[in-house]
Length: 229
Image 1 (cartoon, rainbow, N blue to C red):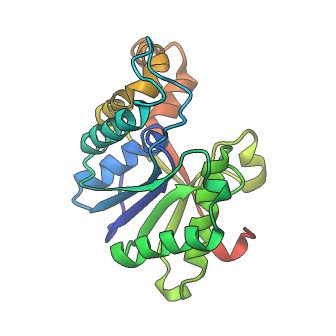
Image 2 (cartoon, one colour):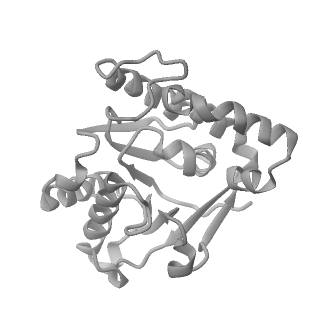
């Protein structure tokens, strides 16, 4: 596996654990090579559907629990610049568009990334994911072409490859599987229900598709001028 020499990677997702499922191996790959990574998590996931298994959180305690889980996940994959942006879970689609774009633009201006990782607009299922993706694309589109960072997007809606083709970038993250699993374990309030099955699958090898999905992380390189958002 080879990695590009990135100046700085900016990761923008709406929820704690968004980073763990799809990009934690890639983040660990970058941090292990000395590339600085800034992770801007827009909400604390306070409306997350899970409260632990067995339940140990309440609606009142969940935001603080998820904040602590996010810190532990970031530590597991080497992130030292974690930004908690303080927006409210499940409301990002109702935020003012200009303010969302400005939030992203400010993050880009401060961190000066060569690479941004976020969701692919139209192919990321959750309304908060979509609102985040739109804001990222719009912010990058506002920049001069020569100043724009590369944009790698995560897509996972059903049938997305029929519309946007195969992924442009596929990382084998096997050397960082332990860090990825540690990030997933850190988000235990949301992941307890699936960790046992995942670990058994990886050990037994009886579900090869699931193993491949865990050990590879896929990204689409997005030309913002080609997207209408």
